[in-house]
Amino acid sequence: MTSAKDIGRRAYDVAPSETTTTSRQHLVGLVEGIRPWDETEQAHRQTVLDWLAGGAPAYRTAKPDVPDPHLVSYFVVVDETRLELLLVAHRKAGLWLPSGGHVEPGEDPWETVVRECLEELNVAAAPSHLPGLPGDRPFFVTVTRTRGAGPHTDVSLWYVLGLPRSSIVSYDATEFDGIRWVRVDEVADEPPGTLDPHLPRFAAKLLASVRPGGGSS
Image (cartoon, rainbow, N blue to C red; front, side, top):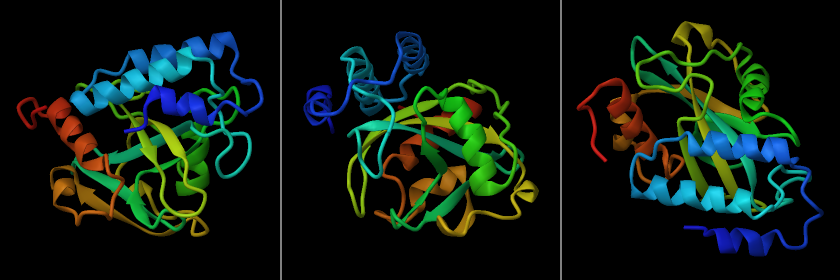
């Protein structure tokens, strides 16, 4: 796992952070509000808090990896009736992923979700109101080394949206080769190496939150 020390080492030659004290405190509050699902999420959460406390730049300012790491908002679209989630075939990553995007300098991560949902899926974002979920605040946090050209570390805040399957009728074909729906309780059965590596853990946490007794840490 990427440590806070490693994060700081890669960011040493980057221009001073555009993250104001107020926005940094807001980011810290968002991360502190995430209840860790397991030891891995606890470790990632602490790494992110240490990274933010260290004053390193948080927002990407140049593609693909300046600074490294930088902040990302994932949003997992869930059909709340079917308990299915939407995956997109991401061209650059070569993986099935939730939708998402880089947080712009000074942007609230939820604003990133709203913007990217319109850009990528042509639909307005709506936070899930399933029991146990935090609405328009992040539900899950990860620190992940990316694949493909320009590998770097993404600090990802995962949000959960509640949208029916019928609302997703198009997508950004310049970014995605396709989309598909997967039952939340079947995510762990997907072939290894085809998903974001943390997605099965996210799905387990989601199930445990909306179905008490449906998962364990």
